[in-house]
Image 1 (tube, one colour):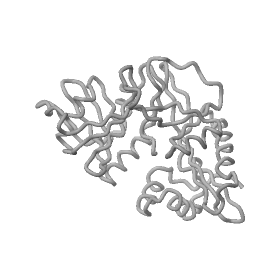
Image 2 (cartoon, one colour; image 1 turned 180 degrees about the vertical axis):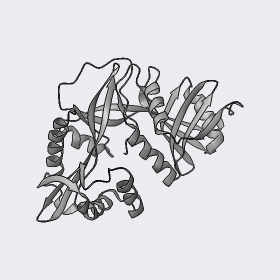
Image 3 (cartoon, rainbow, N blue to C red; image 1 turned 90 degrees about the vertical axis):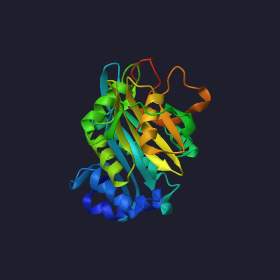
Length: 291
């Protein structure tokens, strides 16, 4: 039986989450306490159960697809998991089909997701999803970074409304982009504090931006760099003065000068209604997706 989750289901849901994604209990509790509405009925979480046992789950988080000066509602499918004992029985496929029906009933026009492996790109491809979102990956060593400009300012990002404004400025012109709302960006701010993941705002001569980063083995992964009036090289000089890593791995929106060999597939889409005519000014962009 597929149904919406209730708060009483959370202990079993968390157990499946930790089994499927290998997250620690602390991180799992943090997600459910801070990302989903604190209601009895969890309207963005589908469960498949049989005989009182949880077989699978799927989150469908609200997101907009912005393009050409307008935005349409969609859903981001996240944490799709099947208990090990029930894999190979079509549980996740059935959950996705119900999620499509629910998304359409709520006015959504598409479903997005970020596969965590190459095999999952193939898995979702067989279920009607197309790889639409890519990013440019660029690695820069500390020795190649210019000194920080003396008049640059940097501070911790704490305002979800400011992040939303910067994302709109950085990614909306001439492309389709996945537009998270203030609630989602507020969760990102909370998570950056909880896990000491640098989320920095900066400005220079009237230009500005922010960077969402993760540290790993002497490197900093810049998972999103939203810039208004700054080049990535300028932003990196500001970040390096704060973070002091040996190297930086940047995920950047694809532009006209992006090297073909440095492009990485990121996200997939399944249009649940007729796909609109999209602008051609830049490759579609999806950031802040958990992979």
